[in-house]
Image (cartoon, rainbow, N blue to C red; front, side, top):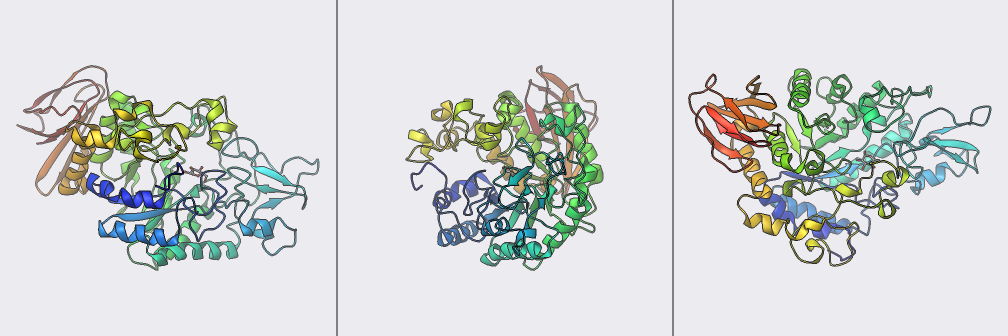
Length: 507
Ligand code: GLC
């Protein structure tokens, strides 16, 4: 909106009607706080203000009020694991060994031979330790060296961070997504992490080590419960955690707390890292549903700012089926901006990368720039995102694929999402209904029934590259199409579902 090429609060205010009309309930905004931007805002130098790039507190209050008028919730991003190295706390902490804030971060001597305190690695490549020349100790950073880890074993840190949350909750924000929370409390013994097992979740992410001594500790689960108490000082605030760094549900489920005194939504990334394969996806869903605690809500994340675009990762031909799955499963869905248009990754040459992760690992495919390109609003220069030079290049196809054109095309991906979101809102079977798999209908087909208030819905997703004949006479004598990815109407008890398509039927 300001023309500086970066999205901002005023720009969000202008687009709130779109967000509400599309059928979303809430917006989660990645960090908008003062920051040197070493990791695009995930390096916070002041937790209680707005970065001038994005606006100011007054504009934030206006955003909140305007969103609330439209029944939209605003969720902010809280970054507790680390601050910026430019945060006044860290500047004090590194100023001398006996500064009162020294213990607010994690400092360690070198080993006797002068080497690193242990083998822990930064999520973004290289050691997790940086040497401080002046005070002759290492500090820990799970991410960049500009993101020193706060010491959550220090009660003063806990209190100060809780007060940072209260600052925004007092202002009326509807909740927080809490960043990288799995790392909050690390091993007090600083035990080396073991190598990651080939084929494991961490191995697939390109990590040499498995974070057994840095992630998902009992101490972290305990801190989540304490943080939740802060949310409970207020009415109706949602507590969401970035807990998805695991496909081991035994590590994920404790984030709900017991009894449900942790996260309302502990992000489940199991499908985000799965292949687009009916067997793999159905077993992950089954396993997950089996362990959801009584009264807890499942949730699914299939796209975000850290993962390649759905339409690229699962194949463009499958992108609507991904939406069909995400929005008809039992559980709260999260949608990344632009996925509702079928936006794809934009190739960014190594020399033009701006994401520090991508820059640190130039030979690898880890850069996050491709999925962060500007929202494609219309066919005007820079897709209506900015009048200046956009911070990342636009997709080549933005003139053919944008909100304006897709809104006018009844068979667009945007209208597909809108219909699904409306059905989800209107039909209790979709949001609170029971969920039952219908097995063995056809190879490469995932199918299930959702049922509530006397209504039965049937979903079938064809993961394969061939048409599949699906016979549902065992479960119904007739059917009616509510929506299908190809906008065809299917009827009766034999459905010939083309390759990559999916259908939602009332049965
Ligand atoms: C989370 C964020 C990611 C960020 C990292 C460090 O994983 O989603 O974007 O780089 O934490 O804060």
